[in-house]
Image (cartoon, rainbow, N blue to C red; front, top):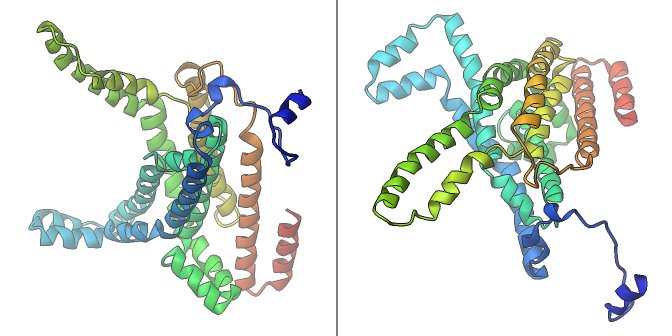
Length: 360
């Protein structure tokens, strides 16, 4: 076999042999693409991901500023809806705090979902050039985890934008970063407690239990049957678009490993990061697990199947990467706790936590 391979090469060059993916897992579009096009698409994808990471929380901060009740009251007055504005003004303090406490995490959850599930990161992961769908999904998992952890979780705790914080750290040194993390992260614990409650009591019932999106697409499919039946009555063939509409509900029930892994990782990352600041977060993580474990166990065996087919098994390709990312979250939580101790001038415990972080 080695002699046959050597006969295909014009000269002695360094080669790398890797196990080929199973046929159902091969991404032929990437395997057959010209090398120059693959390199160009890879660099454009990396540039797009870096741009998204640096700039995403700018509109997120602006929208979060607009969804508070004071801004909503001013907006309704400018639109002439004075009755709604007066009703908002008459709310009790406890009612305002409750509503605003739910609006902020709901905004983060909505913006995060629109970004992650729009297909943008899946598209960029494919442009990175993986020869199998498993490798594409592994690259996608990395992108989503970086987005969730560094942008949604950590950058949401920063005052201002991520880009502005980086510029300030470069200008004034790491002491600024220690102060920002030590002060801002504890202040956001309530935001992410509400985030966990909404994930457990809103997202899981609507998305995982009711399967709302496949149901809506099933309704679209049923409505598409009406013009198709009319065309068949007059002897005309249905439009080819009907075949694509008909397949939409099944596509929405595809098991995409990065989406499931990163949802669970986001919940665990919140628990690990805030457990030392607000131990109550552990209760909400356990609540989410209590609800999601039986739901996913049912969905994975009865409803969802991988793109490669029901018989496909990833062979544990995702778990080592997930475990390493969780170690990064643990390290970040130790550094946050060290920053809090440094701000409280407890240098002995600060040093111990740094040693613990180095050991991690």
